[in-house]
Image 1 (cartoon, rainbow, N blue to C red):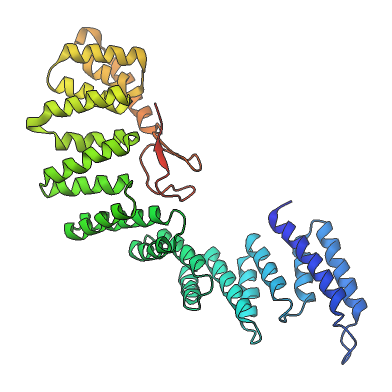
Image 2 (image 1 turned 90 degrees about the horizontal axis):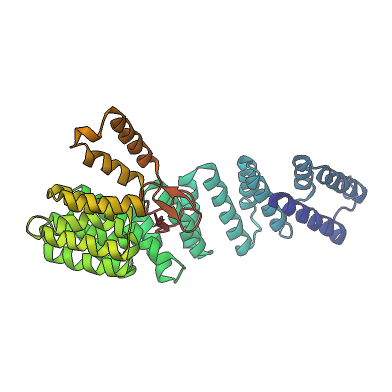
Length: 384
């Protein structure tokens, strides 16, 4: 049974209990008596048992008048409409409740929260935002309102507002708020780097690492920023700490390492690759080493290392490199090898290298916000 249908059954039971307990249907001014209401209630149950929830909901909605004792039931019915995809009907139910002058403070807060959820489901983000802001002003479940606003601003990519909400949740001790806050700060910093505002970017990246010292993304962006501003010493310091702290992201460190140890320190770059390959063997490190050998015309070293890779841990990348590497010997290659190389390249682009530790979503590129479950920093490299 669907959850919304289960809730409808509970609502029907509550309605029956209320009808039996109140007896508010005495004939006054020719209004329908108890038999009329009992008959309609029975008809509503029959619709429910016959798997016709639409008619059941209609009867139960008409049957119970809105008063202070039935607010929760109407809120539940509105939620059922929303969960069933009938958002317009849910909005009408909850708007009707808010128009009532006799609501208690708690009931009004409940109705505001549910109407905001209706607007969010309908894509009416401005209206939803306004109601969540009202909840915060009324001190009506402010943490819930901040969480909903945070999701809304992330959807809109309004990173400044998202960071403000995440900051409040972080101060309030919300689980994972520090992680989300640091990622929002990274988004702001990344935009600032694109516009050349390095000072603003530095400020937000420093703050991101204060909030979450394990934020790999913030460290990588800060390294890139220091390299852009020729602060090699600072870049090296962050890089070395990052390698010690989060070695599982080694594939992302190859390019920063190449930039940090370029030119005069190319030997150090190679030693870094060799050391890390021994500790954390991966296809990306192997390819970086092979490219380094080839760039320095160390053919025998490259050939020997390539042979080991193809025997021990073959991969599309290794085969593609082998074809390019052997191309220098026309006697060993022909048109077939070129076709195979292109084929391997096309397969390489489709290969997933990261997956979400929360929901299992896979991607060929790192995504700091999982597009499936929308958890931050949950994408991890797939061990190849």
